[in-house]
Length: 300
Length: 237
Image 1 (cartoon, rainbow over the protein chains, first blue to last red):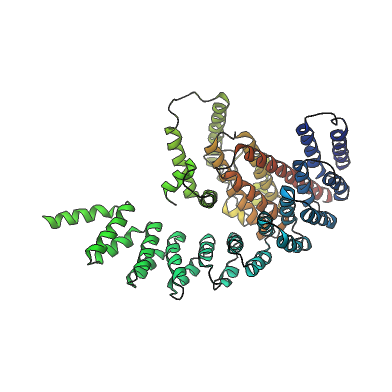
Image 2: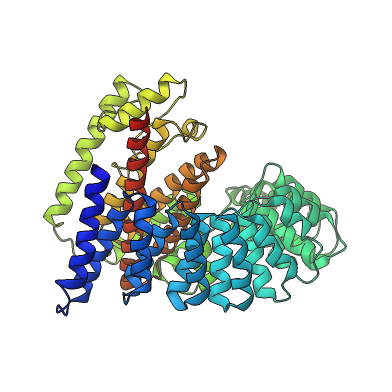
């Protein structure tokens, strides 16, 4: 009974919005009424709600109303609803198209999701971003991975890798590690996915110097247990200025002043000591007072 | 992330859109960063308000309500460590969860007293249980009410509120995903995208208003659908 009543109310409101307000110049009010009616449709049986939503989408309605209809469509558990979403994603443009793409993600229907690869191929940058977001919403790692594996455009690879990081697709990201020229994107993705194990491996791997330096710095950002000590070891184990600099930056980011202090105390080089002292000052370390006191003691 | 970066974020100055996005994301995920940012906002808000003006009466009423709620929550926590009494529905949900051996810890957030917080133990609960659905309904309803009640001009308040909602939303999404309630998980992930956009401070008031209207509509639809599904289940029983 309740369902029938709700359906009647929704139908009445939709009719009222289309007829009684026909002369009204305040379309915003009319739109609000339609949106309320659409909201009521969610309580109706799907087979009755679907034709009404379709009518809204095919009619001369504002984008705001149609976007609301698309969300209702994503919540209707009928294959026809998913087919209509795909049609909207392929045949519309602008905000409405982006919304339809996102709704396919929310609907999560495998067939509809597989159609998104075609939408991606022919779409502009906004459409492509929306497709990646839809894959993320649907937790469709395969879709994002397919983009990362096939694209030749760095920005697109970057977006796909970032999405994989957000989705915690650790294994897939690791599989992309050896892709040439993409080290910065991958290091960033490993930071987002908090994969300190992978970053440590890259930090120890001297075969790709640029990637190694970025990974060393990134160790400070993920700040996993033991990374401070590792950074000190990396610093001590090399004469390479850039790697030392990256290790110090890592310690600075992780606020690991104990490590910098240890390096300061063990150093015999006045130039290096001076640099390490600068780092301790930037880090606002309490140890700085010990050092000043010790230096003053020496003066006496 | 250092305080200087957060200060630049506050002033919407000297950061690229990408950096701003990252900070917004950190604010949503890292409690420590969110706390530091909150402290910075308080300090800088004070600097930018040379004259002390009386707060509007509705704000004073909200503070009073918050204090009363906090006092009630403290009282109920002292009496029953797990349950607080402001919501009968939520209380029933907790009772149901306890009955099936799930420990649920609920407490009141200091900054947003009306926000029901789901504890980690809830994360292990079953999304098909009534407790989960009712908890989710409370979360969605309170998100809707909180967003509607917080004016767009109250930037710092809104950022904190949205940060709280994001945190809760992600917990519910995690539970739903872990327990094969994929439809709910997908909707909650879509909400997350909108919430992160709403949390970005470089959003214009018009954009924020449009996004919020969209989110409120979707929250309402999901609430109605959850109620419908719950009553259908009850009828089938």
